[in-house]
Length: 503
Image (cartoon, rainbow, N blue to C red; front, side):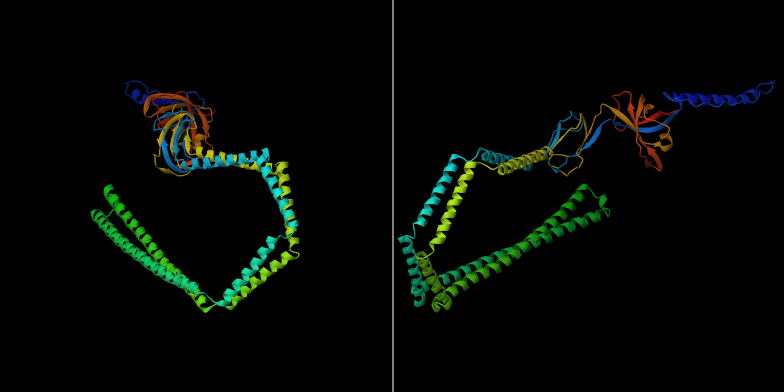
């Protein structure tokens, strides 16, 4: 209506300007006075009193969101496709959750164990535990009575036997090594030498195999480099600009380069294996030689006879055995009595603890362990829930950016969800001079470039307080709620809006 009134005003002004020319063509008539061209008043837009501001706008859903997941992982299931309508809370996709399910199972087992421990403490000692503690107390008292009864004949006999054994060992050292001992040591030396030689041969063979693998890997790397070089120069002969190559040619070049990289990795692994084989040969040969030296030293010691240190150790063992016998015959019993009495005290305390039940502090600790296990299980379940993306509101899947088997990072956009049943328009070129002339709640008339016969009334619902530079101009976004919806409307359609100017 505003454009129609302005066109009519311009037509009227042009007609008035033409009046003098028409009057000059009439014969024998005096020229009329020069007309005064009226000033066309500003025609207010529909619904406004002070004119209207025109701007371009873009159609967007009233509610839309780019959805992502708080965890990363591999997509296991896609439950929707582009264009599907979904209800609020509907599952959209799931990540692989084998690891988190294992964590849940472990957390569940830990919780059950903590609960069982708490219940066991709260229930108190079982009859069989009390019976065992009573038996231990009775055993400790019996031991005390035994020690209090004095040293037995058997104890003395055992002590005398230790003295005799120590004296016999001293006499054997003084008499020198026996022929069987020497023969056994010589056989051990031969066995050590044979084992060292066998190990040396085995490690040398392993090293040769590793060297062969290095050579094979080096040949494979050279072959891959030659193949890549041939494909690379073949492509450069076809075109100096890599972007002019066909996709197949670029793929062949990329595959050849990956083959070079894989061959280099194989050579690196083979060289590491060779270094390990060489180090293993050195260590294995050294260990075998050490065993030979040890066997030789044992034989040499036997053939050389007992040294002064061995004789001294044997004499010390004789003295210790004799001292033990003397203690059993004297005041040694005092220490044994004290130990037996302490065992009785400990057994009685353990029995009293079981009969009294769990202490409040122990119950509090067990209850805290249950709470911690419950929290760990809750965290594990939350982690499992986070592997599933659900619709935050009812809408239509607009863009689906992933596929099954693809790894997605934390926070990466997965899909776009929008409510396509309700549209709104956002201005794209509303200048700062125009922005200050409009107000929220103002009337708007919208016409769509793609639907010339469609005109919709709307209302300014919000004016974004922060402007943005657009092609050198400071522009502001005004959001317009449509008074009605139309099935022909589509996302990102452009529209011309006339916004009533505020009084």
